[in-house]
Amino acid sequence: MVLSSRDIPIYESISPLNSSDSDGEDIFEIHRKRMNDVSRLLSPDRVRAFFQPRKRTSIKRNREEAAQRLFRDYFAENPIYPPNIFHRRFRMRQELFLRILNSVTTYDEWFIQKPDALGRMGFTPIQKMIAAIRILTYGISADLCDEYIKISERIAIESLKRFCDAIIAVYAEQYQRSPNADNITRLIREGEERGFLGMFGSIDCMHWEWKNCPTAWHGTHTGRSHKPTLKLEAVASKNLWIWYAFFGMAGSHNDLNVLDHSPVFKSMINGSMPPVNYVVNGHRRTMGYYLSDGIYPKWATLMQTIPHPTTVKEKLFANKQEAVGKDVEQTFGVLQMRWSITH
Image (cartoon, rainbow, N blue to C red; front, side, top):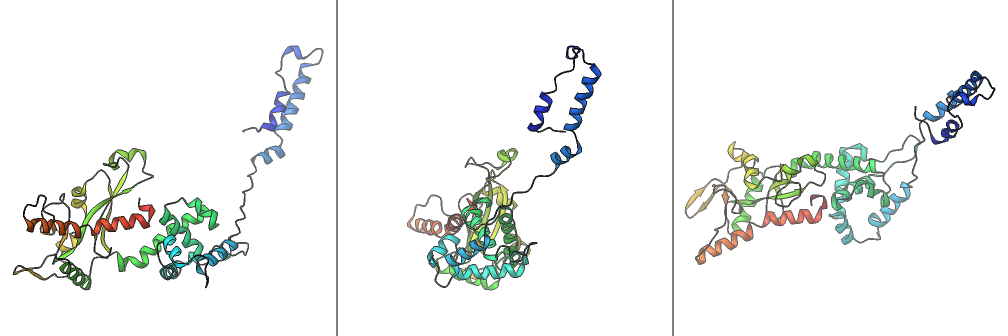
């Protein structure tokens, strides 16, 4: 048993038992009195009060007022903040925000506002989704959502997890997939307009900083940036469409190691890629390719720039290849600028 500070004076008043304390008083009588003091200290009432769980502190956040303030700020007929500020703060237009909100609430009923055990209405779908969006947009902790949205840390984390699960479940089939026949035709046409017939896009890797990387893993995940990172390999088109992504390898790997493990050519190998037909210099081709930098191997599906161009023709090709090959790097830049969680 652990004694509290209020019990210490009782023990301090009980001096050690020795023969000099008697002074004519019976030693057994002194012992009996002291045992009575101890028994009062350990009485059932005091023990019960000591072990009784403390009351949980309840914070009155006034979530109803916060929900009304959010509506007035961004979603009213004449909101306080105009559409350009909404787009800057939430990284999307209000129409897209509301469309995603409708899809998320349809998929997961947890986002729908419901009464709690006391009959008081809970958080609105807008509050839950804004908490998730702000964590993704600014890379902030869940606790910071409490100041403006008036949502607890626990609910903010739950909102983030459920929001990501809902987005993957609802939109993965449409956006996280290999190109179909129509997409291949559009990509080939865009490449032809830019001087690279048969090009699917550009491929490259980026480092995704792992802020909460376990200390024991720092050595295997630290590369040239001297910070623990994870590698993201992606193929992107001119309009910033990432139609292929491979994520999760340690940051100590280079682009070649990632390419050896990634399934980027899996659809070509098993024949599931839509057919590609184009003619270059009188030769018919049936295999598309990606623009890449010099570290990638010289394969038929990868086209690098000329490292040391000498002629006018080689210089023109090198400059054009490097310019068009920057599509994926531009996509990485936009991804990091709009979503701070990817920094």
